[in-house]
Length: 319
Ligand code: SF4
Image (cartoon, rainbow, N blue to C red; front, top):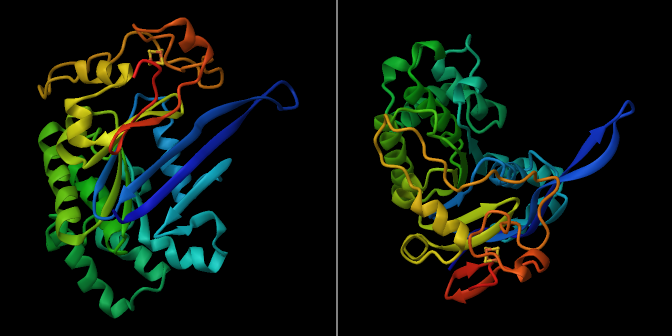
C-alpha cells in the first residue's frame, strides 16, 4: 500500500508546572509512543475517550505542537526535518477542520472572503481568479452562491462546518485532519457532513485522519481504525476486522456500549470507571485499572502492540 502519512514512535509530553515559581513538577504524557500509517485516499479513524490524547496526535502531526520524540512522514518526507521554506510550501497540503469552525471565523468578514483568505495569504491565486475558485468549493461543500456575501452569524451549525471545510478545501489539501468535526451538530446534519467527507475521499482523493469518540460514525465512514487509550494505541485494524473481531478488552468494551442513533438518548458511559490521570498513568498495561480480565502480569509488564494477523495489531497480554 502507498502511505501518505507514516507516524513512528510519536511522543508529546507537556510539562506540568506548580508552585510560586512555576517549577516543573512532572510531565503529562499526552501521546506516548504512537505508530500508524495512513493509506493514500483513505479515511483513518482515531478513536478514544476524552483524555486519550487523540486531539494531541492531530495537532502534533500538523506541527501545532512540537513533538517530544518520534517522526511524522508526509509523502515519505520527514515533516520535522524540513527547512522552513519547504515546510511553508507544504503547509496548504495539510489542513485541519475543527469541532467548532465558528471560533475561527471572523464575525465581520463575509463568508466568501473568509473562504478565499488563505489563497491570498499563500499567494496561490490572484484576486481576479479568487471569486470563481471560492464559488467552486462552496458548490462542492453544498453552499449556495447566495451565501457569498453573508456573515458567519447568519448560518446554522451545519452550514458553518461546511464553511470551515470549504476554507480547508480551497487550498486543495492532500490530507485533512478532522478533529471531532461533527460532534457539535444535529444527527441529520452529521450525516450530510459525513457524506461530504466520503465524496472528498472518493471523488477528489483526499486522505483523512478522522478523530472521534463516536464509533457508529467511524464504522460508517473510516477505512482503517486505531483505538487510543491514555496516550497509546491499544488496537489497530481495518474497519471490518476491528468491528467484527475486536481483540483488545478496551475495544470490546467500547463496541459493546455504542449508543443507538436516537438523538434523544443520552450518550452511554462507554467503559465503567474513570480514565486515570494521564500525568500518572498506571504501571504495566495502562488499562489494567478498568480491565475485567487483568492478571498480575498486567500490572507489571507493558503489553507491546503486536501484529496478530495481517494488518491487525493489538497490545494485550491475553491475545
Ligand atoms: Fe486487560 Fe491485561 Fe490485556 Fe491490559 S494486558 S487489556 S489489563 S488483559
